[in-house]
Image (cartoon, rainbow, N blue to C red):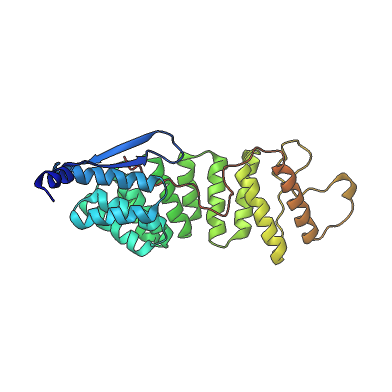
Length: 295
């Protein structure tokens, strides 16, 4: 092979074309030149890894971030993103460890502290999560993400009144009650969850997430023969009747708890038919959390 051809092969730019975001028609082109500054080349690979993560390819993003961490183990940003990707894949132990190492390198980064705190919540380390999130509050006292995450941590630890007060700092009463109800449901206290979802709907009858959650919970109660706790405080949007209240034709007829629960369930299903669809089901997923920006 001639020296001219070798030079051409080495001098050729390597083009990587990736979508800037999922479902987007605009494309962004990254050009890596073998003779370029290695620092710039590494940052270009980091940008490519971020786009891969944003597009949902966690396995590929993990591989890219691992290579960067191996090259620059003291770079907190590389460790931060790798930790998030690991947690999102369910690798909680390694993810929390990676985020903790990133925190050691960059102690006052609120975004990093939030992601670490939330990962610790997912892992069930509620005391550690609270400590981490209070570190974040010491840096930025009114950060809504931090306050929400702290509410989850103390709520799961059993301090539900404190959790409600924290949720209430940054949410409407209906939303705060819904999130508190979710905490109760995850702790196995279905009666308290039903009560709080009832309260959420009494404050905002259009809160579809709370209505969907009540449907799910009443189905669980009905299927497991748990005691019914129908509420008379939640008004249907049309004003037809309160949840758990008797129809006029039922006056004077004593109803069993099971029958009351069936009526409550039917009322909730009827209510759902009148509300706009919610973006996500209520009790099958945690209160919405978005991992911090990759910018």
